[in-house]
Image (cartoon, rainbow, N blue to C red; front, top):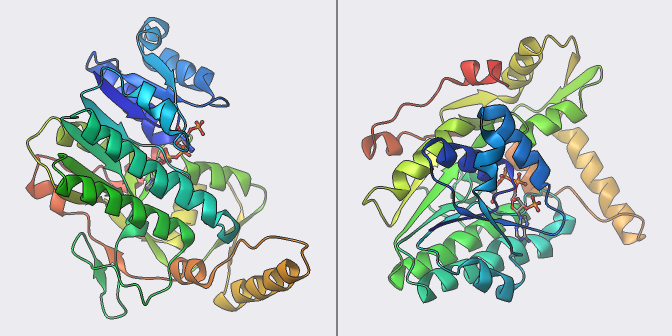
Length: 324
Ligand SMILES: NC(=O)c1ccc[n+]([C@@H]2O[C@H](COP(=O)([O-])OP(=O)(O)OC[C@H]3O[C@@H](n4cnc5c(N)ncnc54)[C@H](OP(=O)(O)O)[C@@H]3O)[C@@H](O)[C@H]2O)c1
């Protein structure tokens, strides 16, 4: 049986849909407060017999911080997709990020080894890629540089990858995917857009790598079913500036917002204010210098490697935006 950890999330639920299209109904994890009804609706909207298909999924409750619950989730499992993770850019979430993303992944890989799992496909992030000052293009070979400050999220995803590579050394077949910002209906990115959807939209002058959700799930399944192992793949179709992405999104959704550039100085001002508020115990910090650097980073992310391993072309981002 296949196990999908994090099946109630954006990537996990889209993976369930893609697997169901091929008639595969895995074991899927959820948590106490997970919204399984939302997944049922996705199935009902996608397939004429969606409810019947949804009911074929075997749901098991599992929490990445609870080893025992994971042991139970692994019963009868032979292949694992690990799509669970805590996504937060906030400094105040640093301990929770390490607990869920790094420590939780160490539990997952230990159980993969214990249960002789055939293969693990782990969803990491471009946040865990290395980058040095003089590199203009970032890819799978960019080495992690500890002297460059990173966001707590980046450390947690890098730590998780280290656990996956450790398990690989111990004999587990693993593949890591490092998607850029994943676009799709109900994606975390879309939620941010919708939240700020009044009459002003903001952007910073950095660039980011984007990829369509269907491409991510397609590649994950192809990698799982292939002989490829001990590899990581950056999944980025195109790099877009913050301004072009905001403009394209607004155009597609016919929203007539005013677009405002946020300067580095403004963000450093917030960073300073938050420091002060934290000292006087009024607020826990969100901003880090590393996050500000990411928002203004113009390095390009190269997601071409996957094309030399499987027969695959990325969906153009402008078309993906129209499907939102
Ligand atoms: N979306 C992107 O643009 C993107 C880009 C690159 C990498 N990623 C990576 O892809 C993974 C999934 O992202 P996503 O966009 O699907 O995020 P998401 O929508 O927030 O989903 C996260 C999933 O992880 C589960 N989860 C969170 N904390 C957990 C815990 N302590 N124990 C067990 N399950 C837990 C969530 O369960 P609940 O439903 O109960 O909350 C949910 O199923 C993350 O690891 C993220 O780093 C995402």
